[in-house]
Length: 317
Image (cartoon, rainbow, N blue to C red; front, side, top):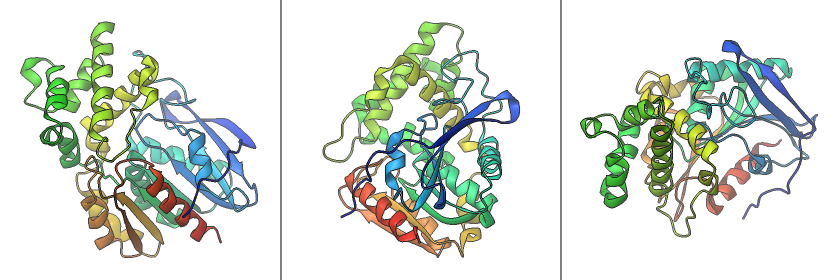
């Protein structure tokens, strides 16, 4: 069984000036002469914490991490209600990743993404397949309208009481419609109490719908009001717009990835992001290996970590 590599610190970091006046934080760690890899974190809005560095052999890899627009150490902070999200779309994030690659003088790199990062990784690789050496994705999502509807409405069949509280936080007239969009509107309300109530309810539901595997623990980051606001604003922004990607396009265009080795990793108990998304991709992207981890839910549990590290170890040469 694989294990996380020991904690390491960046040997280099900086702020990348990108379009729209945003500045994106990035860092590099491991071996400056090693195989390049880039990490695309989840959320949207989670930020690239130290955990991600430990998924790679630090002797073999030059690991680049970035905090996507509006989160982590990037500025402006989406937790601030005055921060516009107009220039925060999948297209903008893809352009940021490419700009960073060029700035660092990297020709091709391994792309690692989890959950939302899997959606972004697919979108980036399909746009720039010549820049991707390998692709490792876990808790695989495409952020389609159907997937958003599944998480925000259909998961109520699994957690009916919790979902009813989630639904009933929005105004009564909006409860039968697009809940992600309703929450996005509440999170833009001029009344701070409305915004805070929406952020707390959204993050409470986030903690529920991923809790399908034994041993799940609530995410402690949701105890931080600024993290809650940042996370909720960015997730609802992207979900209300189905990731700003033509619906079904990521699966349709997955054949562009043929010729790129990859691994798709999903938990059997991941009801939040069911395994059919990864399975369907593997039918089109035939160079991908599909790994289903039994008794694993959504996120980086021990089984998923084992599979991710095994994949990066395999590709380190």
